[in-house]
Length: 352
Image (cartoon, rainbow, N blue to C red; front, side, top):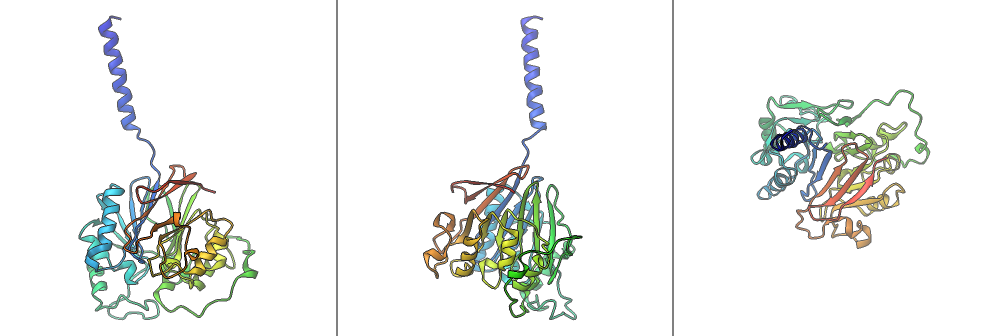
């Protein structure tokens, strides 16, 4: 072969390798972002297929503060130009109230929730906190979601590609127990029920998300007695790697038996500077043998330093907030990395 021929062959081979690399991109993992909405909730999930699910969307008002913070993470950090799904766990303003303001900034293609009351004859027991027919936020949500809503019940699958997601609780009902599930051995030590919670918190939509060996659990603001049903008399959840601390870390949630049963490795609390972050819940998490790191979005300025997480695991010491927490799960789910905002020290944890 001539020198020119050899050079041409080398160029063709290099071009072929380049094209092959372009056709075979590096596998992606799962991304989870805990966005600071000042004691509300907004958790962005981006699947390996680049589908996006935002769980709750923070408060309305405040000059669109929460919508702006979510938009920054969606567009500038996660690199998305739209949201595939917005899931509202329940009908409290700090979880669904920011939907209309967010939709002005980010395209939202579909909506998931636990159901809406019939405007003509609302069921006060099923929807204790609305949205009422004349509630401006409820009216805005209905208009925004018309023709684009799906109601999720316990046992339903989340409509996401590349991950497994199942609804564990919705509307006060929990998923059926697995066949032949053994009794939970922690039943004998379970604390007593609290008075029945008649608020919408007890109706919260809870789900578990799985990628390979990695499991994530988010229960919105689910409260004590319904949490108990998820793990007693049998466990319906299973072990968890990453736990979004329920109800902003309030102590009418985070049932001790649920925590001991799911035994998370990492907990992330979406509290505010003066909302959530109960000292009792912080103590429960610190006492769990399984927990290697317990993060808070905010330092609770109303409690003692020792009643908060380790300062290294608190995203916002400034009450004005704005810093988020991100989790990056390996493509096979074997490990996951937790980092505060874009500049925090990464910490790697192994899935069980």
